Structure formats: C-alpha cells, structure tokens
Image (cartoon, rainbow, N blue to C red; front, top):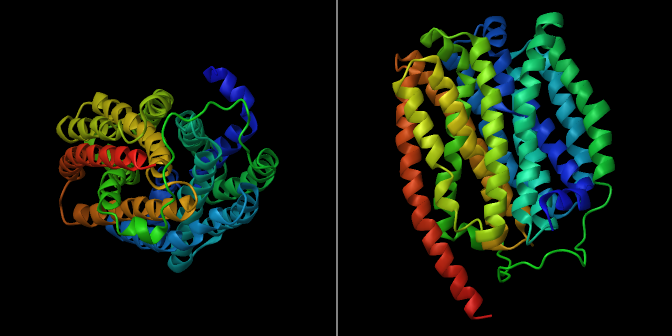
Length: 409
C-alpha cells in the first residue's frame, strides 16, 4: 500500500492521534516558556526560582505518570480522551486565574501531566497497538502533530497575548480544548481500529508480552531510557531559557521564535523518513542514529554566537525529535509486546518528563550561580554523544536477543 493510500484507509485514527499530540502543546515547555517573563515579573521569581518551581511541578507529574498512564491499557482511546481533555482545559484556566505560587505550581503540574504526558500517551499507545507492519508510518504521522502545533500555536499565542494579555491567552487555550479538540478527537476515535484483511503482514516475528515487572528487571530498558531522555532534556532547557539566551547573544526573541518553524519542518521530514525506515528495518536496528543530529546541534549552539547557530541547532535538534518520536513509539512493542504497552510507555513517559523537569530547574540554578547557558549546552552535547554510543550497544544486544527468541518459536 502506498503512503497516501495508507493515510486514506486509516485517516480517522491517524487524524485522531495527530490531534491528540497537536493539542498537547498547551502543556509543552516551549509553550509555557512564552509566558515565563510575565510569570517571573508578576510572581517575583528569578530564573532559578521559576526554573525550580517548574522542576518541582514537572517532577510531580513524572511521579504520577506511571500510575495515571496505565489507564490506556484498560480504557479505549476515546474514553481516555473524554477524561483527560476537560481536566487539561481546567489546568489552562488555573494558569490564567492563579495569583498564588502554590496554585501556579499545581496548574503547571496538571499541564505537564496531561499535555506531554497523557495526551501523547493516549495517542502513541493507541497507534502502536492499532498497527503492526506499518507501525512506523502510523507513529510518524501521529507524532508530528506535536511538531505542527510547535510551528503554529506559539506564534498565534504571542499575537493573542499581545492583544488581550497573557492570562486571557490561557483562557483562549482552555476554550479551544473544550470547543474544538474534545469533540473532534472523540468523534474521530469513536471506535478503535481493528486489523483489516488488507493490512500488510508484519515482517518481524511476534514477541512475547512482557509485564511491567519483567521490563523493570531488564538492564537494556534503562539504557534505552538514558538515550531517550536526551532530546527532551536538551530541547526543554533551551526552550525554557530562550528569553535569557537571546538576551545573552544579542538576538531578538522574534528571530529565535521563527527558528521553531525550522525545527518543526525538520522534525516532520525526519519523522516521515524515519517511519519508512522503521517499517523496512525495525526500530531496534536504527536506534543508534536518532541522537546524532542533536549532539552536533548542541555543540554548534554552545560554540557559535551568530544568528545562524540558532537555526542550525533547531534544524538538527528537530531531526532528532522526529526520529525519536517515531523510533520510541515503535521500539517498545517490538521489544516488549503490546499487552502491557500502556504501563511500559507510562514509565518511559515518566522518565522523559523527569528529564524535562531536571533541565530547566538545574540549569536555572546554574545560571543564577554564574554558569552561562552556552557552557551548559556544551555539556549536554557531550551527554548526547555518550548516549549515541550506548544506543549502538543496545541495538546490537536487542537484535541478538530478538533473533534468539524468534529461533525458539
């Protein structure tokens, strides 16, 4: 089946997953960071103070995610949507109405748990279950919803916030979730996808379904997490401190914001290409490549001060994000099966959220201590290069293990 034919045949489910990841934007770091300047001013917080508050709230969401995330193993994608989207909208309302640091932290906790946490968890777990031989394509088309929102919604939010204020901008976000996102997604996902007789047969031998307890005893699982945390850690840190970075480099905020469009384009392109590669070779085999671009991108951002370095970083980081979303969506069912996929993905999502929590908080404290962000980004580049080597080892071990398992069947 051609790529366009695949989309036409499965449009309802692909569009529903796309919209779930698209509207997760209201809980993403880059979106919250747009209001960072006003939040720090109104609440009297320093870079380190707001970073620490963001870190605590995000850590709370990371600790909650393994428990809340399991609901996708018990409920349909539509049922999960009907639960999480209204609460997500409520979090946006709290963000707009809060005048207390405690309530601010709670609203960020909900935004982080329900946006990058449960909206993505619902979409990517469903796509991984609904498709097998063409799982890579499905994961790519679902994941790029987040990139589409990154290219459009922040720019629109800046315009809205300039016209009616940043707090009213968050009320508009809540209204969009209730009036647009909820009915559209619920209608598209009104029934789960079931295998069709026209589906391409999977080329890979089926794997047994691991329980979450078994996965937690697998050393390779933790090495994969070590690698998957890198893009989110780096990207969140740079996005969160974008106001500080552009001031340090003498750039304009508008110029840096425009670079997100470059990131979105490269992410979408990389995701679509990577989806084809996953279906052809498997996610396990191409696991070592997804961190290479962000490793070089971080190095460029750390060493060069020209405006071009912002665009180079965004383009290269976007390649890693696109590959990461596709590969990580496919690697878990390839390695651990689908019966307990929600619980397994919830642990992965928790670790990724943890990385996005540590990044802004730790780097904010270091900034207050006088350690410039470019120096820290250089250290992140070293971390990403190290994770690349770890993924080479993991890929080889998993390939051998899956081959041995297939031989005994």
